[in-house]
Image (cartoon, helix red, strand yellow):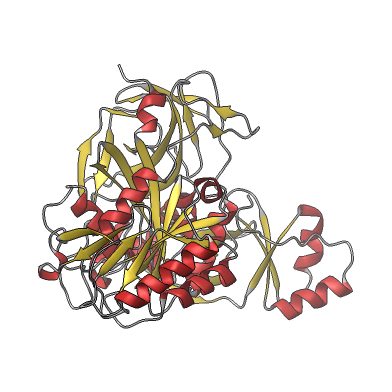
Length: 525
C-alpha cells in the first residue's frame, strides 16, 4: 500500500489568483483540458449567456459570469495528481480567496498583458507573501495588444518587490504572437491556433540555435532580449522561488492555449509537493502520521434538493478513508465521514481515499466550522484561519417578522460559512445586526441566499461606519458613550468598535487615553 508521504510526493495543490477579467477562469478550464478532465474547452460564460465555466455552480455565478465561491478540482497530469483550488476573482469578493490560500502549497498569479499589476492582484499577492505561498506568474492575453515584456517585468519587481525570472519568453509583440522560447531547454515552441482554443494548441518545437526565424515578426528582438536576460542572470532559481523571493514567469494566451502546457509542466516540475504542516505550537505533523486535516471552506445548499452542508477539508497527514471515524478537535466528539465527496463544478463523486494535499468534501458536516481541525489520534490542532479586516458595513433586518426564525438561522449559517461577518449588539441580538464585508458583492450574496434558501425577505440599509478596531470589555463602556461609535461582537467573541471615519477615530485616540483600539490585521485572528 502506498504510504502517505509517497502519495504526497506525487501531488501538487495550488490556486490561481488574479484581478477580475485577467483570465483566471479561462486558464482553469484549459488546465482541465490539458489534464484530460474535459475533452473540449468551451467559451467561458459571460453576461450574454454562453455556458458557464466548469468550476462555477452557484446560480448567481451562472447569471453574472463570475466566480463567487471556490471549488476544489482534482485531475491527473503526467502521473501527478493536481488539486486546483479555484478562487473567486470578482473585485468585490475576495475574503473567500484569502481562506483558500491557507490550503494551498503554491499559487499562479495571472496578469493581463495590457494592464499588468492591478489593485486586487497586489492585495492577493500580499496575502500569498504573508502565508509564504510560492508564486508562479503567467502573463496572459499575449494574443491581444498589450505592453512590452521587459516593461512588465520591471513593474512586477518594483510593485511586488519580488524578482521575476522568465522561464519562457514571447516571440512577437502582444497581438502578433508566434510562440515562446523555453529558456530551460533552449527550444522555440511555435504555436498554431485551434478553433476558439477548444483543443490543445499544436506545437512545433525547434532548437533556437540554427532556427531561421527571419519570417517571424519579433524574432530578432526576442533574441536580443534573451541575451539581456542571460547577461543579468534572470534565471529560474528553485531555492529563491520556494522562499518567496523570486517568481518564475511564463508568457502565453489562455484563450488560444498558447503556453498553457509549459505552465502546467512547471506546476509539476517546480511547485512544491505537500509538506508536514505545523500545528498551533509550530510542531510539524509528519505526513505519515495518522489522518489529520482542516476545514478551509464550508458551503451550504450546493445541492438544492438536499439542503446539505459541505465542509471542504485539506488533508494534512495520513490516509483518509471514507467511513473512518475522526475527532472534531473543537468539540472532542467523533465525526463520521460516511459521506465524503469530491466536487467538480456541480458534479459530485464519492471519494474512497485521499492523501496529504487532497481536498475532501464532507457532507452534512453540521458542527464543522472554517478553520476547524479533524484528526485521528494523536491529537493535533492546526492554526485557525482568521477573519479579515472588514471594509464595508450594512445594517440588515427581515421585512417579514413572521420569518424571523428563518432570518436568524440564515444569518448564523452564512456567518459560519464565512460568507459575511455578522456583528451583533449584545443587548438586541439579531433584530438588526450589522453585516461587515471585504467587498460589496458579499452583501448581494448574503441577501440572495437569505431570500432564496431560507425564505427570509430582507432589507439592507447604510451603516455610517468606515473603519473598525478591536477593543475589549474595559473600553466598551467608555466607547459606547461617544457619539458616532458602536461596539459590536463578532461570532468568535471579538469586540469591534466601529467609527464613522478614520479622522474621527484619530481624534478619539488623541482625546481619550487608555482605550484599547487595535488594528484588525489581515491574517490575525
